[in-house]
Image (cartoon, rainbow, N blue to C red; front, side, top):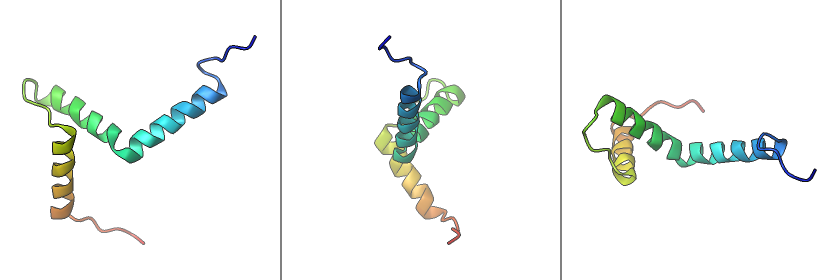
Length: 69
């Protein structure tokens, strides 16, 4: 049998890589924000990715967090 299983080691590795890239790129954060926004404010527009990133940057600059090391 030469087919690959969707739950085999290679598939798990690829899913892990996909998860990692989505987390470091911010894609997962934006999608979580959109999902929460739709649930908590139905009928209101969801910000575009650019609007989301601009608001996020403004918030970070206005509320700096202390960092260790």
